[in-house]
Amino acid sequence: MKKGKKLYEGKAKIIYATNDKNLVIQHFKDDATAFNNQKKDVIEGKGILNNRISEHILTQLSNVGIKNHLVKRLNMREQLVKLVEIIPIEFIVRNIATGSLTKRLGIEDGTVLDYPLVEYCLKKDELGDPLVSREHILAFKWMDVFELDFIYEEVRRINDFLQGMFRGVGIKLVDFKVEFGRSEIDGKREVMLADEISPDTCRLWDMRTDKKLDKDRFRNDLGNLVEAYQEVAIRLNLLHEQSNIRPLNYPKPKAVKIKKK
Ligand code: UDP
Image 1 (tube, protein in one colour):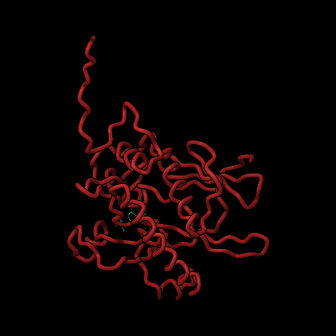
Image 2 (image 1 turned 135 degrees about the vertical axis):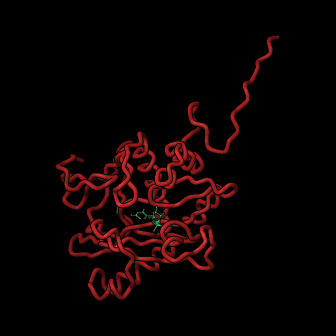
Image 3 (image 1 turned 90 degrees about the vertical axis):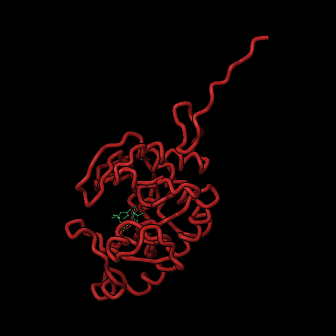
């Protein structure tokens, strides 16, 4: 697979063409942005962790029948993915109220929702990605009703699956954002999950302590972002503990004295 010219550069990723017109390379950068690009930094290693974590999650989702754009991971920072036209809506699913929801509606932070809440935001940076309703989406033809109903069911399934997956490793899935795209290969039109699912796009809290293991560490200046993402990767069994990586919450190992015989 030959890497071609840069087609698009976003806040956290770059898309490159390939010699196959239906496939592109998705490159994960170390750039972190928040609050509609007002806060920016480069966090070394973030892109590598997101590439690996997103590969794992999208592969698991594919195994349970959730179609997505991932073909395969190519290297530390890159994935081969199907070329799709991204639908201009961000789909947000919430299990626990936090972030913009609590501010917008005055809901107490940490309120556990009886049912998952699905929200739609228009992808328009200059407007701050405003919340829109199903009616807006249909009125302005950002999607047709079949796409909207299909994606609603898909995001509910994704939420069920991810909640179980993270619960199994002691993590609460608080909320997440996903994007979908349209593809047309040999005249066959499909809508599929695209972009990434990683600690950049999810809120993940430690089950026991509510410690934040996601991008809120950057948004709220909590520090140790890479260590938190590493902890997610370690718990998902994607990364082995390294001597210089001590997962958050784990007590510092005691020095072991070796007795001489
Ligand atoms: N989110 C995202 N990209 C965005 C906006 C939100 O990945 O442009 C994710 C965010 O990480 C969180 C969820 O969507 O997991 C809900 O975010 P919220 O609407 O609370 O926005 P925020 O408080 O981050 O502005």
